[in-house]
Amino acid sequence: MSIQMPFAWRLARRYLRPKSENGFVSFIALVGMAGVAVGVAVLLIVLGVMNGFEAELKDRILAVASHATITGLNGPISEWQSLAESARAEPGVMAVAPYVEERALVAHGKAVNGVLVRGIDPAAERSVSTLDRHVRGATLESLVPGRYGVLLGKSLATDLGATVGDRVVIAAPQGVATPAGVVPRLRRFTVLGTIDSGLYEFDHNVALVAQADAAHLFKTGDGVTGLRLRLQDPFAAAAVVRRVAVDLGGGFYISDWTREHGNFFRSIATTKSIMFVLLLLVMAVAAFNIVATLTMLVREKRSDIAILRTMGVSPRTLLITFVLQGSVIGLVGTALGLLLGVTIAMNLATIVHALESLLHATLVDPRIYLLDELPARVTVGDAVRVCGTGILLTILSTLPPAITAARTQPAEALRHD
Image (cartoon, rainbow, N blue to C red; front, side, top):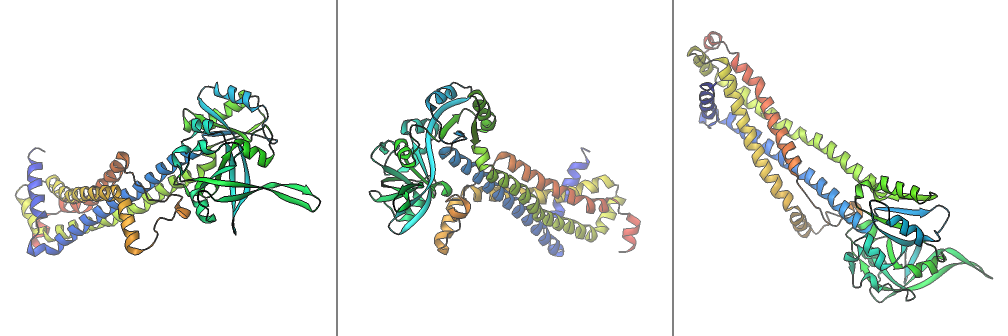
């Protein structure tokens, strides 16, 4: 083997050099190399976008949503203070915050929108989320009980045409009985600022008010809709909140962020698997080009192969020669694809913004993709998996023509020349 490998490598390198008589073969080899590079690059970019989308969505959801919630089965929870203290003492629970939440209508001028009104205690809210980082034009502490201020999601404020200082009307679903019939319960709120979380679903549907103001609007009295929990391990939310609810005596409805948003992440995981399989077809086509290249080369070099056999070159050496030749094409293509894919993935947001400016079109619509930009994160694991698959495919594609070359019979080949 120590003698075979240097000789096989020199022979493979000689066959790789483009010559005028086999220019078409060299062209097909370049096409195969380009095909492998494109396949690797596209697969890395797609997986990078999926990874980035999943990670960004997860970060933004955890920034504005509860790790877990405990709500009452039969209306507001009374004596919630003692329940909150007990929940804080549970292992795995870092913080607890009460909230009052109800669906309502918000109106500004002629614009009307459905909204989820959430009443919060600013100090407690800071302990369970990082929502304060996304408030623009005000702070959570601006929500002072009795002043009826509201923080609107950015997209919601845009749809309503409301700006800071404007007054909006929030209509509660519970009606008020009057001699003229049942009329909605209305309350004017002053817009103090906006919330720009980057998560369209949240920014388009949520309005934050002081907890006491929400309790007065929705007539919950001293009770709250539920408790929001911040956990040490968000990915263990389902098990932890179930245990906490049982320890509190039961009789609660529990939920967590994985249940409320799990469909997003399951669909992303499924899409990643499907895209990986589909995009492997691109590399499979490139592998067929390598098979075609080596097959034509073997047919063209039949006389050379026969002469080498008569000179004592073993079939094993010829097999190694053509495997090396095809492997070099695959390795170079994979390396180029890795470089191209990582470069594009790292600059994808800039490329998308440039294309949007050039085409005067919105390529990443937050109403569709939930995010206002296209993130990409190429992991080492994905890079190893993609490049390993590409190299394996190219090596396997070299075997049929290499075996054909190794089985060439010198007398048979020379008799036809």
